[in-house]
Length: 633
Image 1 (cartoon, helix red, strand yellow):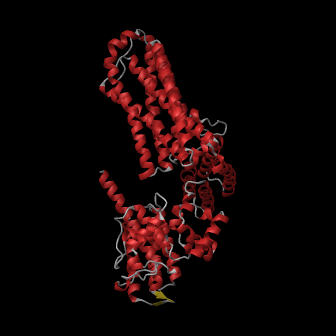
Image 2 (spheres, helix red, strand yellow):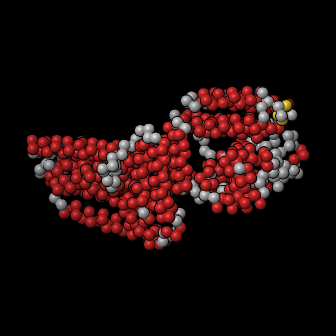
Image 3 (cartoon, rainbow, N blue to C red):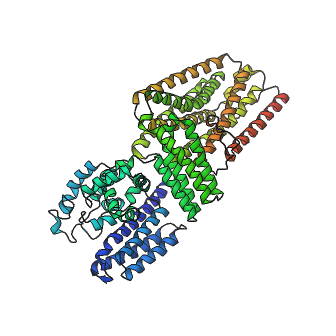
């Protein structure tokens, strides 16, 4: 079943990429087929008509979506324009618009995971491309004379203005039908992106790139137009010229295609938050509430969420203030607040983002703050898991069932191992989005809360019974079955992995800011502190009478259940899964899982009600039956 699903998804992605490439080809090459309403190349014109017809066929084959009908209507418009021998500018505009709408409706990966290496791109170009396209990209390589049609001249500025880096990447990946251009899909993904960026620089001079560097560094508004690699890769110089003029667009694109790291430094940055929120207000003014909501969610998940770990170290109060206001903004969108009021909200957030940028500036941090941040994060994230795991270990010991102890230890050790694997995957393979992080935290918290609710009520019931020693010696062997042992393994795994997942992402953000030594020292200090807390808890639990041990453990589980319920719903709200209804009279105390929204409060009240009912039932049973009941396995 999984093979079928992933195969179908891959086929859909391939169809979308092929359709996009055809549209890009039409936008760039139609000018070679028609000039001033007359056919200048019958062969090229026939190819343009064929490609436009293929676009329609590909769109019809895509999975049904509400947007597909509009895409087909635009594709028909494109076919009609080509059939009427419309001006190249008009055809290019329709094709680019349709390509953008296609990717909005059927998203495919648009950006590399790593910043493209232009030196690597130069080496690959010399190895694979220079023989045909020429060392200077002018289409006059030693093998060019043998080819029909001749290879593209990347130095053609007019052609280069119509082509995005994504278009070049698609050609590198899939090749070009009816030409000598082969597919380089066998090259690693990063190599293909490096080649695309390197080929995209030929259309613009070094002098233009120098001017572009000056503009980029002096004009902050350009950063909002090109806030991330994804936007840069999908932008053509012609499209950018509509906002800043052709000369400036050529210069900025020339610079950024030579230095994509200048844009990559903004990925997940606060400039992206500003850009997405501004676009969200614009979408409301245009009457597109759904799009506005998507942009607002992207502002948090793609822009603010990645910088949260670093900001939590330098100014956690500011972090929680911005996070709360962004949630209130999304809630205001849901209830249909006016564009003017939403704009006022964005202005307030924008002012706080200025403070956040100052807090995150390179000079704002030092070794001491890195040490304290690393230690605080690990202590905060590790304490919840530690309390639960230590209570489980103490429970097994007091039950005299040491044979199930390996299951408990196996659970938390497996969580640590998977945490390290998650770190590797996040850093080198998949990259973990803000949404994935919030979903993992949210569902993990809710699962743990449900489990702890049942465990807490069960422990409270045992604390009400008498004659504990006889119960443990005679009955516990039946109460802890093999199924229960795996239950303990699963609980230990879930509660520890949830915290490990959160911690490694925080540490990754801190590590990128430098001060590796203080960060390691802070982490080791936190580990020592957690070990001491665990030792003290286990030692204290041994001296407690059995009844009191279960009573205290049940209340600990109850408190953690309420905390995790609030945190779980809050994380799902931040991922856009659960709605947000602000309650301004409630304080925000994230350590206690208390958040000022009706949904999180309702979840915690529901848990409290379940605990109250469960504890009341336990007391009633204890008053009626002096003998303890065997716990359900």
